[in-house]
Image 1 (spheres, rainbow, N blue to C red):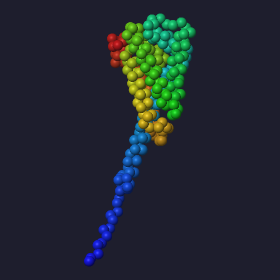
Image 2 (tube, rainbow, N blue to C red; image 1 turned 45 degrees about the horizontal axis):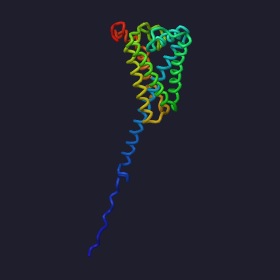
Image 3 (cartoon, one colour; image 1 turned 180 degrees about the vertical axis):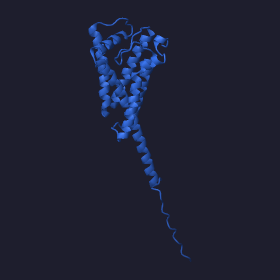
Image 4 (cartoon, helix red, strand yellow; image 1 turned 60 degrees about the horizontal axis):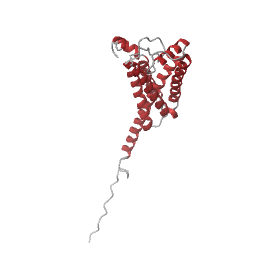
Length: 224
């Protein structure tokens, strides 16, 4: 009888999990890269919302005239009102808006309160849009002093679009807080890109009225 030779075992290159070690490392690297990218998008959303609300708040508080113009406009924009409220109540309304804006600025600056920041920002933008829409439907030509200044054109659809864009950014940021943990930037270059993107968005949002006027998209030019 001949001897039966044992068949040598072929060394496997795959791990017991079924994926080669090299491939596992590539998958992890791809996941880390995707996670960093999402984190920078989230950072850009935080910066855009925070910067926009900061500019809005600072423009109201930069001087007495700016504050009075905003307080007057805020009172006139309330649904069903055609004249300004009495002085004290008018300033209380303006102070409430400023307080909400300040809260958003502080909350966006802290990673632990980012989700709350986006939530408050969305609620504020919804309220602002409701008031603006009511003014448009009521035919009230009230200048928007949301960012201080001396804008003379009344609120219109361009302001609703502005709020919708900013709301979409806040909603995106809120959704991303579920996908990735909120943390600081890993690299300076990534943080710089996120800041530049946020700065561009902030400039466009702040200059919405001027851009709308440039292209004839104001209520004065017949575009509601």
